[in-house]
Image 1 (cartoon, rainbow, N blue to C red):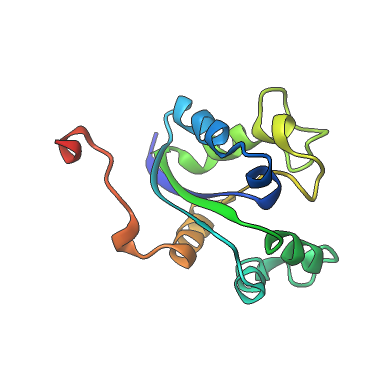
Image 2 (spheres, helix red, strand yellow; image 1 turned 180 degrees about the horizontal axis):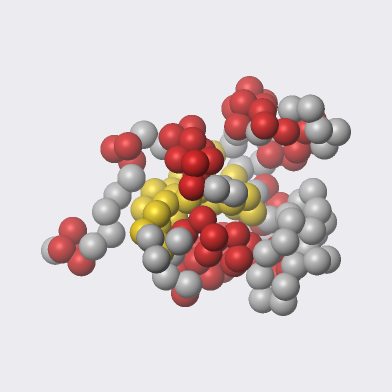
Length: 147
């Protein structure tokens, strides 16, 4: 098992439903710690740049519009195999196909309004974290750091 960091975004639909705390609780119950967090409303430029990997896909403009439709809660999670664990906790992109007890099964409305984003690889996690956070924003969560 390897300690790593990953990016997680609570999307506008879940922020609107006021379930940020419930989502964070699921991560914490699965030994993922929040080491950085902020709430922002993405500009169109930021959303386009962040989701540029999907630029040629037919859903790209709808995704950009959705992600700029209201505030999002962005966080960096740290823990053993954080990328894989985060994706497991989130569930399948399509909430109809997501396993019981996953975030998307419990909080998502549709494949488009699917409550959360999570990095899909360690390489992308590093890129995505750097997109939203400076190194100085990332905290260490050891007991010694709390004394």
